[in-house]
Length: 560
Image (tube, rainbow, N blue to C red; front, side):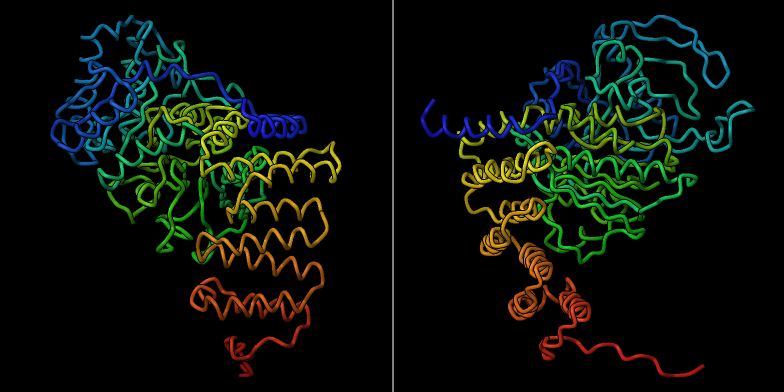
């Protein structure tokens, strides 16, 4: 080892000694050897994208299949059966991969004879843009009596229906429990599951260029790990009797899991979605609900996800189309730079959608996107589509290994990794603040000038706490090297808030006024004047510049 690296690794080893519950990465997945890529021969871009994906993932030529089917997103049940399911099944059978045996199954109190694969070596399908998305309801397919009305539908997501291809003969209506679904057994997909089902995901987006970018981002990011901030937009549902309570609780638990893993995590628990003028940036992970179309900070003109970002918004019709960058959620999230998402093509009912807590824990444990998505999805032959590279593992290796690699390569993402480690150190309950500060100083010495690091570092210091001047200096360093106007607004407001907490009122209100002078448009968009006025009332500060502030609303004196 070179001396500089020896010093750095000794520092990391000391830091690791303070991290009692280190999140372990999973063992390498075998999924890559068991995929078949499917494209639409009627769509030139579909074939090109399939070839690109196969090349970057080393998929052999006989695992790439072209089928001729409509390019529409929605197809009839008959078209799905004859032009999608049948040719895929025929090819897998012709290759000798599907060898079936009859078996009796009981589902919904009825007996079915199914043909189940034995030793199926095809564990997943990757559907390329051009393969239809949804199967329309066929009123001619009437289920038997006794099935609840809400489950009588035979509409479905193409992906979810194909997931049961290894087990032919199940009814087209209702859903089938997912044998891979589990909150506790976060293991890789393996052969016992493959005899029943496959992991089916799609590489789809509003444009073919965005699909190619999704593929490349996933491959690039997993050489290290996904870095950036996490945002969770829950609704604050507190009534356990509410049918929406479990999903909202899962969002809360997912936010806590991300915090424990060292991510800067913002959790909003207000019923409306996060307002558009919230200064988000560097978003790597987003989970939230509940509006029909993409809203909130994503509508800011300059908003862009971090490369490799994973984003999911819970809504009954979040993925009725993937061809639009404005309608619903799945397409817009991809258009804004996300590499993977999930969504519903028809009404799924919230209990039968992916559990965000399980999904997040699965990703953090080292599972791939495809594995995490299906691990969190309770049912198959239903309404959910998984959009992204199923092989993408955003957290494939332990953080220390990624830090060491990034340090040797002088990777610009190194400060993100150091910041994640700093949060893990700061969370340890059995260390004194002084001991933590010593370790944090070691990491800060390697972080350089990245504004996001110093912002996060100041946030961490506030919780310990050190002498106030150290917190102030860190925030000032972040303001001096901002990445965006969002960052200037956000960090300056944090510093002003810290000054107020220290009863340093002149410095706090000077910051509000400086923002309104230096960034008048952004300050107005992010409601800095209203914030300044509210704080002035709270702290009885009467020296705000009247020239910079809009007039206060006058009370309505009109009598009824």
